[in-house]
Length: 100
Image (cartoon, rainbow, N blue to C red; front, side, top):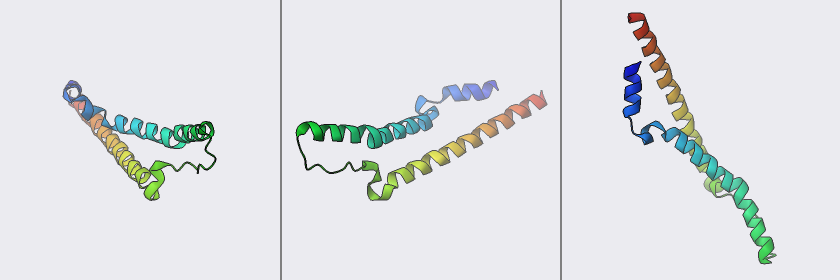
């Protein structure tokens, strides 16, 4: 168990937290694209006096939403692989307890 923890602590931060970083960046992008962007777009259109403004087009839905498909694939596969890593770590811990 100690060896696994030491190996985990020796990894750089970006190796340990890349999954969480990608997930948070995806949440922030979605919030901007579907909540903050439209609100500011309408606010600007109302305050600028422009009566010919169109509707807000979410930037991530361009090209058929390929961005959301790719982020779903990346986050899905990475969470599955993280689960496999956790299962393997639990098996190693159980084997070391049996040997001791």
